[in-house]
Length: 148
Ligand SMILES: Cc1cc2nc3c(=O)[nH]c(=O)nc-3n(C[C@H](O)[C@H](O)[C@H](O)COP(=O)(O)O)c2cc1C
Image (cartoon, rainbow, N blue to C red; front, side, top):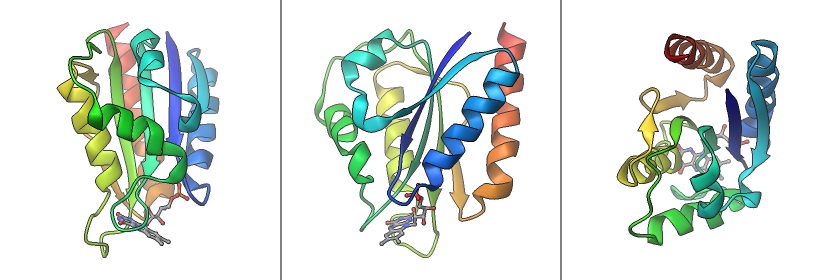
């Protein structure tokens, strides 16, 4: 089973988690690659089978700079068919911001809208990703193993 782990980041937290996930999934026998969202388009999403999206929210509820293109492409698209895609979103943020984890929530909503299959509910991390992320990844792995 093959995985792309797409990260959206400003200060590196999400990128670090994507690297952890790549190692963890590879050790588990999956083929997994962490990918900077900057290098991903909707056309790529049509070809992928399984993705994990790990992204922070920045500014005033905005996507990180490296996630902007994909975010806007999905936001402004219509009629895309992503029904062959499985996905799960891990959202980093801090709840004292008005738009808590908005970017992750939006990616989850965009992908659902275009028919992609959600592997788990979007996970909202309130600055506790050190503990929350390993638990979330375990959940995703067991969901996948039960499918395969
Ligand atoms: C200037 C600034 C703006 C932020 N804006 C938001 C926000 O609107 N909503 C939110 O949930 N978190 C917000 N955050 C929190 C970040 O999402 C959080 O620090 C995250 O761990 C950063 O991950 P990254 O290093 O992958 O970018 C903000 C943080 C900073 C420093």
